[in-house]
Image (tube, rainbow, N blue to C red; front, side, top):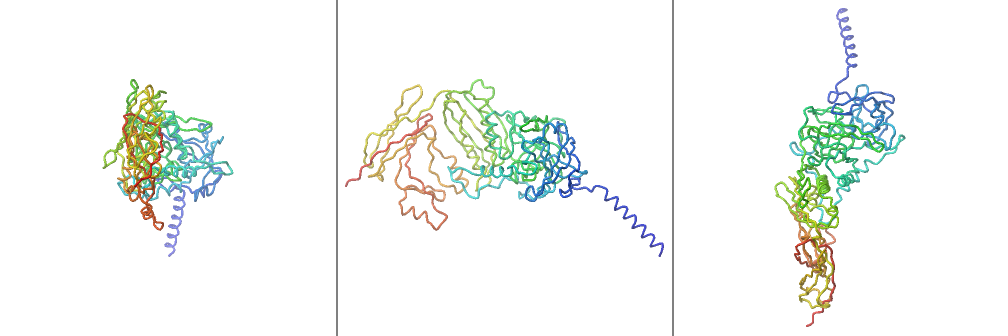
Length: 609
């Protein structure tokens, strides 16, 4: 018995000693790295962070924990650190460092993500790793094999033609609210600036893109990098690395735009980065890349990494408050854009080819930046010009939708309105009826360096009073630069319904008149509405009719009597017709752009029996 007791005691002693030794060995956590909760972080603790200061290899910088802001965001703390590194002492908070992993006692506590507006010290806020891991583990709604985020419309109902869209503005307001400075004992905290290195883009295009992206904290910067080589360089990394630079490719080709951040943690489930949202789009899909840092530019206003992509790898698939998630195996949709400019002999570049992120709501914005930049580089003349824009949007399974528009101006094409194809993009990629992938976009601009347009100078009638049913002759005087006025005679039948009333006739250029269109009931209706417009090289004569019409279930029903109108607009039903003013319209081809409008009013005699 004594021998058995001694043996048992010896075994127990060995097991206790082994347990003590095992307790001293770091337990593997996520991605083979042990983590530490923000609850266990104390002021004065020291550790290190990883980020790329130059090239592609992460380097260490020392950190000291200052304190923890509890409940900084809903159910999320924020750990305050003071990094120590010659570059950071000089530059302060650096845009593009967002996501740099921070370690205390060899354990990952989170990602460098927040900074102070106009802060003089390089103090930063760290998003706890637990909050980031929660986003990594969030299940995606997208079925396997389907592009993430490609079928989730913003709007729950159709948007009538002509009504201003609010999706982008609503998204911007939400993003701006997330970035609003939060007052603390240490000052005002905001997510670190997210630089977007642009190359080959004109100054005005950069300015307009910056205005659109400002609420999201994305700052397009000229001279902050380029589009990278067409083929990855031989020394480009072949996988993501903790502390390595990660890029999000918005535009690629003759014009480039790439967002830069830092990888926090590589796991088998995906790559965590940023420590704050990029745009806050939730489940999404943007092309992702491994990036190379050229330099960290120190600035009193905003310091940032100058970088460029070196290898395409996967897609950004989740974009939420505490982190973004990159799936190295995923593929994001992209849309080729081709811009061709004619009538600028001797211009070094008249054809532009780019690929843009095919993710709503960015597609139309990025396409507009490509066109604006191509125009700015190719056509900068301050001269009288007229132009024809032909845009084609190729929709998968439906063929191209084509638009032809005309314009003219005294300052060249500096104020060229967005082509009709871009309105189609805005509505189709974010519609309430179904997913329609965009295969490519083509924009063809032809310039004529002359005032090749007419404008409506005046409209007069052949008589002061007319009888119902008569044919009225309207004399339309068109002005044209360099020549005398041109007189056009337009014949209009006087509607019998206007007997004893006033005849109100308006004559306008085709591009200034909006057709009567019904609220769309299907995707085909939506495409038809967007592509239906009067030609800009024509006159449109509009006669105001009595009464009203309605649009109902995709149909336009004009000139209804009051009883029928009441029946179609019942007060007890939500499915009722939308009223509109009746017009009878006549299109008169002119052969050149027509600007302006004028009107004439006459009296229609009573019908005498």
